[in-house]
Image (cartoon, rainbow, N blue to C red):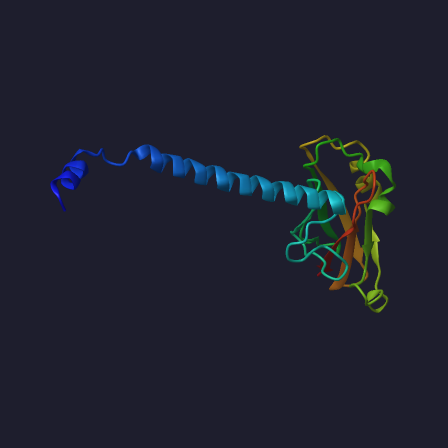
Length: 195
């Protein structure tokens, strides 16, 4: 190495940290754009299949993969429907609740249809018909219907009480929930056992 090269190496300034920070900022911007693109794609996909669709992680709430008690059916527009565990009473009846949480961006008119179009209780498991001739009486139909009468504002929740009396202990019950929607909303199915 000759003296000119040594002198040039000694006099050249050290690498500036500006180049390093510029790379870091570029990487942050790159990953932010990827995240925004992924979010936009997800929203686009939801728009294609409709906001009345159920989200599909794990048990989906469909007739073939019903949800269990204590779980929540999640709709792509933000509506959440949770069915509680049945609670047994001394008189042989069972009570449970169906809770609607309005995470959509508008008021929901739950009582738009009759209760029979929105909540259905059948004493069976999917594909088995009525469980060996069993039946279940819905004892508080009017109370459940009146809980759904007024609109559900955005960001609020409403709990609907359901009281059932099966003809015997251990009856499997399918509870179907079809919340109203301006277009179409999938039915969420919950599989419960009374006993």
